Image (tube, rainbow, N blue to C red; front, top):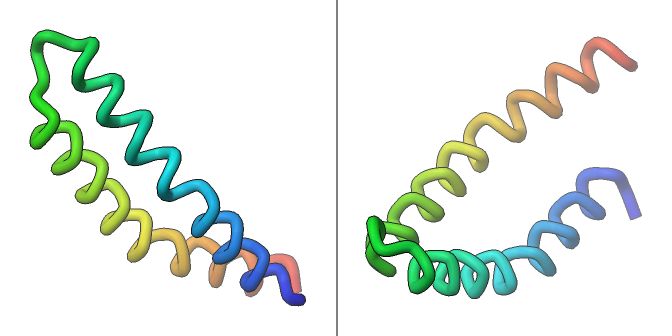
Length: 64
C-alpha cells in the first residue's frame, strides 16, 4: 500500500470521531452552536481537501 493510500485510510478512520468531538465541544461551549461547529469543520475539511494534495505534490517533487 502506497503512502497516499495510507493517508486516505487514516483520514477515513479519523473523520467520524472528529465529527463527534466537534459536536461535544459545541455542546460545552456557550458561544457556538452545533450547526456552527459543523460548518467550521466542513469548511476546514474542504480547504484541506484542496491544499492537502497540493502540499503533498510539492513534497513529492522536492523529495523525489
